[in-house]
Each structure stands twice: as structure tokens, then as C-alpha cells.
Image (cartoon, rainbow, N blue to C red; front, side, top):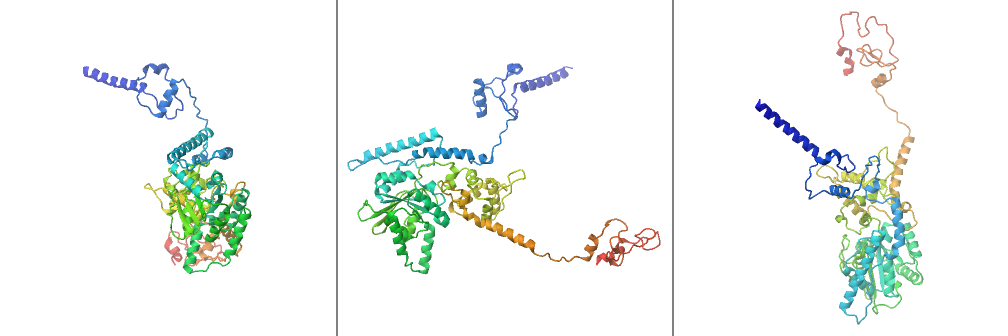
Length: 580
């Protein structure tokens, strides 16, 4: 009996301990939306212990409880997050608000100025003045970001790069800004043009729209008229297309056009009178004559014209110099910021080109994805691929249509669900999944490798394989994409061919006699007894047409062909005509 009592006491002790521990522990239900104030019955039974480390959520709730803040659970107050927010894109209201802020604060976007100096200024004093001026400039931009909540491009913060720009501007007679033809306004810095005139009123500003072969003649004409209204001289140029043209001429040893000199004189005379931009792609000799014709005032160096080439990284400054010189004088790389120091190169006696390192000017931008798609930021260094790819495929009115993406890569992107908008553009995940399956970019888990696919797609976008051209202000972006019409024509041709095929006369079908007799019966009773006469069959005689079958008066069971009621015919003999 003693052992039994002892055993029962131990069991009761274990049960009591378990109950106490269960009462002392906090409930951790995942469905709770609020913090619980432990009072009442459980308050005196809490397991008080020292807490030296907490998670962020526990720390927040503990601090709120100490502050006396109460929370109300709102389980039914559901807010659906739109796909644009999940993809890192801005809504239409946010875009309008940012656009208004950009217009109101664009006068704050200034590049750093070099302090005034003369021959009596010592190098140490000038260096310190440059540092102070640069520091003040950075403080003003930081204050603009904090107060107005604006997003600026990750502008150049190294003073040495700006010193290179100052020297190029001071040495040059003509300062040429090189911009990308697909989005010229993003790469144009209006304050740089003002600074050039501040240094010397005799200096001339010019805009060189590179990669203009990606635009049609009509698109270039629209941009030429826009820059004329802005009072800016702009020329259209393609370093890659001109290099290929010159290579072809050298291979076949073709003679240059004799009328080119006459055309150059016309361009020079028009430039000296007033700004008249041409939408034609200039060739190498025409571009050099344009440089010589635009500057008529005193030069920084007597007897020599110096042309400075400035602009953002990866817009084609070094490629332009190599095309003009016809041999590789400057190293070229697709990575932004490859050129580190300015270089002076002589094209011919009396004409010098000055290459400046690529500088990211401070400008307003909506998202970092826009900078990646524009080639300002390196693609291989991006951490999140979803916003950049979503900007290409999912952004309304500023995107490449679904049929263009499918036609470019030969893929089929999954269609929207029945409860979704059938005309919505594809999401980044849908686009990357289709591209990954097509290229065979798979992860170890058997799923498409979306980050790898995103890098390839973004490089195609930067290189121009996926082409989207930004229009001038007050022009609808959808109406400024004639390059997408070839994919529409392809779809329409398929539709026309299918419509024409319906108009063709139908071919006469050849039907089997057995199939015709079987499927044209009015009363088909397959797999039942006594159907051989109804379905047009007679044992041993093969198929018989519907007209040949005559109703027969069969005494007894119809599937027997003799009068002996006890004798049955084997099924294989009845259906032996089908074996043939």
C-alpha cells in the first residue's frame, strides 16, 4: 500500500507541475492582433524572470505597454496591396505628386561651381576653397532630400571627378553634352549649360543625341523641333552605326560622296545664322564641320578649337571619340564610370577633343529602377530585380506591350485569370518565368532562375533590343512607339490569313462505309443483344447499307439464325467478317 501511495503521489506531483507551468506560460496564438495586458486571475501566477534580450516585435509591445498605449484589433479592416506596390512601382497619384514637386524644385538642381581664382591664388588656398564649396553644395542637396522628401539620383560625391569637369569646361570652346536618344531629358543637365555661360559667354553649348539610330526619322523630327523651342542646338548621331558604315567603306574601298562638301557648307551657314536642328543622322565629316561652324568667337587657345565631351556614364563619349579618330584611343566598357581622367586628343591640326569622365549629375528620379533601366547604375550590382523588370513589363503607359515581349523572345507569357483584367500587362514574375523556361535558366529546385533572367532582360533593354523611346513632354508615350507596330502587323497578318482560310471551299471528306453505317443509324443499341440487323450487319455477309436492311420477322430470339432453341452460335463466328 505504501508503494501505491508513493506512486500516486509522484503522478499527482507531475500533473500538478505540468498544470502550473501551463498556467504560467504566455499564450502565443498566431491569430492574435493585439497585445494582451496580463491582469486578473493570471496576474499573480506569472513566471517573473529577467529579460535581457527581446525580438523587435516583443520589444515594441513591451515599450508600448510601459507607455500605456492600447491597441485595438482590426481583423476585418483588410487593405489589398496593389500589384504596383508589390513590384516597387509608383501609383498614378504618387507620380503626379512627384512630377509637381520636381517642377517646383528643379531650380535647386545645381552642379558644384569652382570658386573664383586668378594667377595670384596659391594651389593650397584654391584646394581648400574647392573643398568648402563642394561641402556646402552637398549639404544643400541633403537638405533638399530631407525637407521635400525627394529622391535624387546617386550623384557623384567624389570631388576629384568634379575637378575633371571644371578643367574640361575651362579649356573647351564648345561643350558638347552627349545624351541617350531613348531618354534625352533624363541625361540632359540644364544647369551645366548655365555654368558654361558663367565661365565664359563666348563658350557654346551643344547637345549630341547619341544612339539616334534607334529612333525613326519622325521621332528625331519631333525631338529636333522640341530642342529648337528650347533654344538649344542639337545634332543626331550614332557612334556604332557610323563606325559600321566606315568599316564597310574601308573594306570595299568606296569613294566618298562628292556632294558631301556642298551639304556641309549648307549646314554650316544655317548654324551660324540661327538654331535650325536637322533630324538627319550626321556622318563623321559632317559632325566635325558642325563643331567648327558653331563657334565664331575668341578661343581659349589661339589657332585651336577645343571640343569638350561631357555627360553621364555609358552614353557613348568614348565610343564617339573612337569613331571620329578611327582607331581605339580611349578604352570602352559597358560598365558606367569606366573613364577616370580627362584626355585631350587631336583629330587634325587645329581641332582637339577633350574627353571628360562620366559624371552622374544630380537630377530628380522616381525610383532606382529607372536608373538601372537607363544604364546609369550597373545591372550586375543590383540587389532587387523586381522593380526594374516591373518597370519594363508592368508599368502602365510606360511599358513594352505583352505581344512585343512575346514576339521579341519567342515566348508565351501566361494570361491573366478569369477574375483579373484581361488587358493588364504581365507582371515581372510572369515575364521572368516564361523567359527562364525558354532559356533553360533553372535553379537547383527546378524553378526558373528569375534573378539571372532579369539581368539578361535588363541588358537587352539597355542595349536596345527591347526598345522603348521616351517622348518629349506633352506627347503620349503610347503614340511615340512606331517600332512596336511590326509586331502588331505580324499579329494582323496571322488574323488575315486565318480569315482567308475560312473563305476557302470545304474539302470533300471521304468516309468509311463501316463508319458511315454505324454513326448514321437512328437507333443505335451498341453492346446489346440482337443489334446486328438494327445496326446494318448480317452475320457472315459483312456490312449492309441502311437501305438494304429489311425488317425480318424472326421467331424466337433474334440473335439465333436457326430453329434449334438449345443451340447457340459462337460470337467469333457471328463477327468473323470484322476480322478482315
